[in-house]
Length: 136
Image (tube, rainbow, N blue to C red):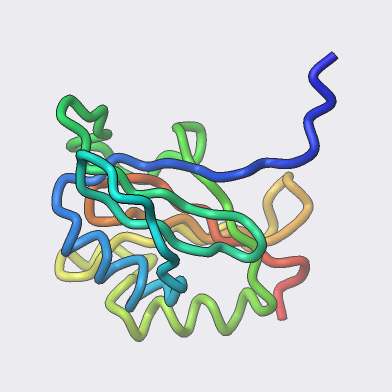
């Protein structure tokens, strides 16, 4: 048996590290943390007590041309307030309607998962789930 203790980190491919760093640092508000000097570009962020590693890979796998799909590869973060998260994301240009000028956001306030969910895409169309314990 492996005796797994916890999830250590999630890695995501990104095409432009500067654009990705702006999104994860300034839009999502994640704290950048030190990263070892690798032979490829990337950035590491703290997500609660875990890490998110962004990697500019030589042959990445992207979800290019896809809309939000909660059944596709994604990672989820938990926030304190669903309502405040929706308001914040709206202030950053995300919208749940068909506004072509907005970044897409899918709201699932009463889903079968048992908790409210928000789905958004990062600049490379990686799916991010944002959920909360309640609608407050």
